[in-house]
Image 1 (spheres, rainbow, N blue to C red):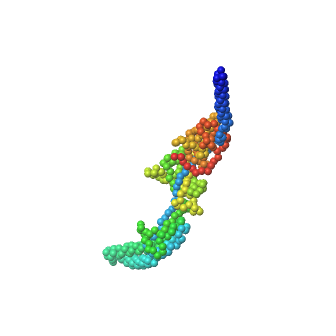
Image 2 (tube, helix red, strand yellow):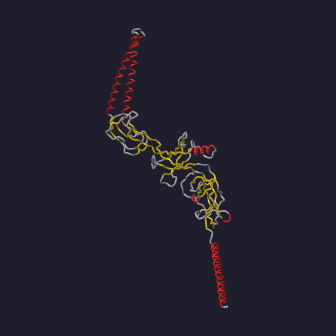
Image 3 (tube, rainbow, N blue to C red):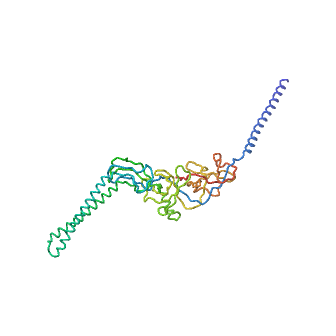
Length: 402
């Protein structure tokens, strides 16, 4: 009897304890689930800025890298041989056309000129004698007092004397020219290089291997050479034929140039030459722009970037370059969809415009709301809290997408 009561109490105690334990466990799970539900409900949507893409009339510019070259370059060489007597310029100075740069020893050439003039005087004297002799026989020929042989002999002597005078005169002219060539003058105006030969040296002149004395480059105006692809050339030709842009060969299109240390295209130039064929090895064609260089800032051999009008005026959609994402070979932009959900749009891009924004060729409309910040924290389908903003032009270099 006592054993039965003891077992009954023990079972009752265990039963009540089990019920209490199960209640506690259930309450714990219920509380955790409620807390998670409340936590999820309290998390706010990620704030993002949205804006409409810039949509306005623009003219596109194409950019090329090129090099400056002198508009004229001359190698100054001697035209007569002799000892170099004087150097009449300072290395690197600006010289004028006709300025005497070098003087070669003139004494041998003066002697040659004196000899030529003496020979010319002798020839004139001989000619005078021949003329007098011929005049005598010419008057006697009518009376028959002179033979035909004598008449012909004196006539030939006169012709020979006249030819001798012409030859002597040519020798004098040549001697004068050689004496003049002893003064080596600047054939163009421009910046002169250093003297390659110092005073006292013997220089060779008047041949293909004549001694190089110095060089002169004309840098005002100066030329800027650059190359474009065959596809660019075809684009420009078709634009010109459709009346959307001037002809590159005949209308002097404007070109803007900037130097390596400049942020903007500050130098105005004019396109004045397009080559007559496309290089079969590189598939490019060369063009040239000419620009003033009155302050001589620009030097031959310097690099620069040029931009030229690459389209007619048209409306274009533009967005900041940094909001464009990449998925392997695809480019995409996050836009705001229905119910504030994030969605992506694949786009085809054009070049950067002069306002620093990227031109979007296809895939985006002017009415789309593009997301401009927190791009690393969002993904397709995510609900966000949009805040209105605007897109402003930026400063950036032009670049083409290839």
